Image (cartoon, rainbow, N blue to C red; front, side, top):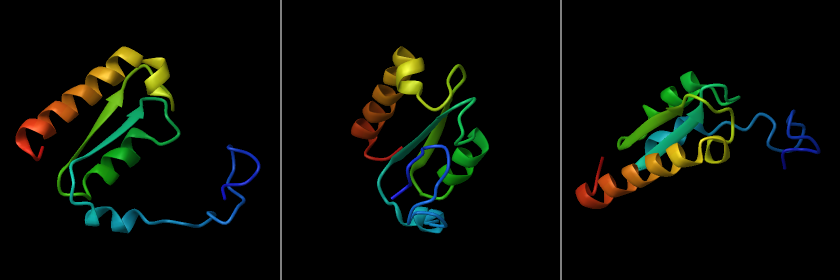
Length: 91
């Protein structure tokens, strides 16, 4: 669907944009990215403003794979988010 290379979309997802529908998400949502991610912090911040119960986190020493590049920080962020959601029902 993306195409033969991860670097450039040439498949049937080319031109696909459903970001306007992010506001339809009703459950708590965590957006993450790395400081040097191709999904830039500015983009993630703008996406995170659309769902009602969302937040975002930037991993300062990562690119696109914070779960591998900053495993400890990534797991801590995820645990913290899930714990708060579990206790409050909303963030």
